[in-house]
Structure formats: structure tokens, C-alpha cells
Image (cartoon, rainbow, N blue to C red):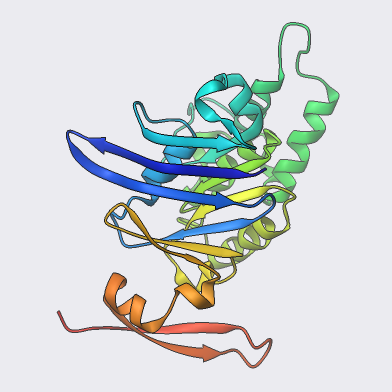
Length: 255
């Protein structure tokens, strides 16, 4: 799915949170959003998902304005995994993931075997296939995060929005999720704190003060000079001899 924004912005209590963001994201691209806390990454994702009232500017999905599409239409096209999302504690893991099929169900098309197979695949993709009967209330933070991602996958979206999806995950599941993101046949927009993880995206948008400061391939936008200015860290670029991948080693700069 192609995603574009034009002069997108949003303010809260008169204070601008996101200002003048114009983007063109290609179908199938994995686009990362990075920036310091409070830079507007989460708000931008929510604007693209159509979850905030009275935005300025426009979001278009495959060249169709988001504002002209019904919530059901949008839910069939995109799925959003937020940083903090809650689920009814009485639900089982499988119940929670089955909710991802809701946009596709109706009185004439109730939940059926095909939907069940989609839920099975989503649970397997996040390593939760053996925990379908577990109650939500018994899960760890990392397990809950994986269930939310499985529910998003069960929607079969063409656009997947993820806000800090590796939070709460152990290193194995962080790496598994990042690998899954790059292999999905969908467009992915993901906000990340870990800049070494962000290097694996096709392109990155660097945000600061609600604005898009830079946009392009990771090696072009994550320069030591920009990291010092935006993140207030020094960075040394290292090369992993196993696969020649570039990595950062960071150190604090004096205030």
C-alpha cells in the first residue's frame, strides 16, 4: 500500500505536537521513525491511522484521502499496534487475536474455518501458538505485546503501523519481530528507539520537535553530526565482520 501525507499536523491545547509532515511511503516499504522522546513519532502514527480529531493536512492511502473512507474500510487496510494497549483481562490469548478478524465479519459472513486458520498463522508468527488458551491476565508484558502484534496480523492489513513494538520483548523476540517485519508482504511504518534496530529499515524519518528533520536511507540520515545534534550523543560507526553491517556505539556528550 502506498501511503502519503501532505502538510500533516496536529495540536493539543494550542501546542503543536506534529507540524507540516509531508511523506511518500512506497508499497511494501519498511519505513522507520526515530527521534527523541516527545518528538512526535507516536502522534504521527496515530494521525496516519486516523485516530486523532481535527488534524491539519491530509493522509492518503493508495491516493484515496483517509477522511473519505469509513472506519470499516480503514480497518480492512491498516492495523495499528500502540505502545500501551489494553485487552479485557477475561479473554484468552486466542480470543484476543480473533478480534483482529472483526473488520471482515458480518451477519452474512460469521467467523469460520478460514478465519481460524488466519488466527493460527498469526499466533505462530509471534511464537504464541502454544498459549492460545492462556488468560490475558496471566501474561507478561512481552507476551502481551506479542499478542497485540498477532491480533494486528490477523487483520490481514496492507499497512502495519507499530509504535515501539520491541518494548518489553526479550532480545530473541525483538530480533524475531524485526525479521518478521521485513518479510511481511505489506507496508510497515514503525517507530523505534533503538537506532541499531532502525538501521534495518529501508528508509528512516528523523523527527524532532514535531517536524520531520531528515528522511532517507539509514546510512544517509543517521550521521554522527545529526545524532549529536538531535539525540545529544556521540556515535562511533563499527562494522560487524560477520556480515559487514554497520552498527553504532554511543556515548553521552557533555550537557
